[in-house]
Length: 135
Image 1: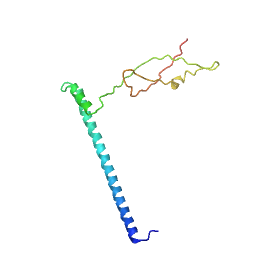
Image 2: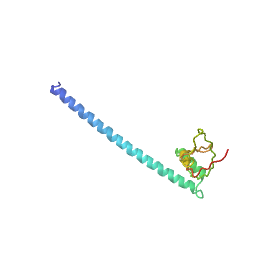
Image 3: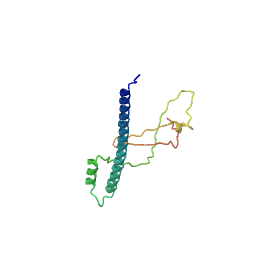
Image 4: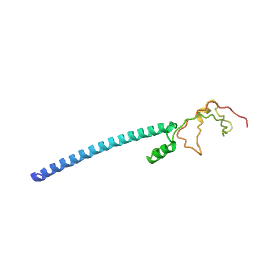
């Protein structure tokens, strides 16, 4: 046991110092989080202004705007959504004596979308109908 008054007093002072430093760390973390949020908001505002300027090409030079965006490390990619109608022919194997349930087949098929020139960021597919083709 630490019954000596000077040791107990020093321990209490050290505990207070540790708590004060922990409070300071917590305050600095909070300030840092606030600054990160402000920076992200400001960067988003700058990006939106530059994108709007880029779209309004009658009044602004596109190359200059793109150069500014690149120098500020602003992502210069945009997203467009397209609807594509495609017909797939799918050949399926099954065991003799069994049948493929064509009525539920559209729930069982998944399709993947890839592009050699562009990054496909999202896609969905819905099988609208299936039709058996004689081989």
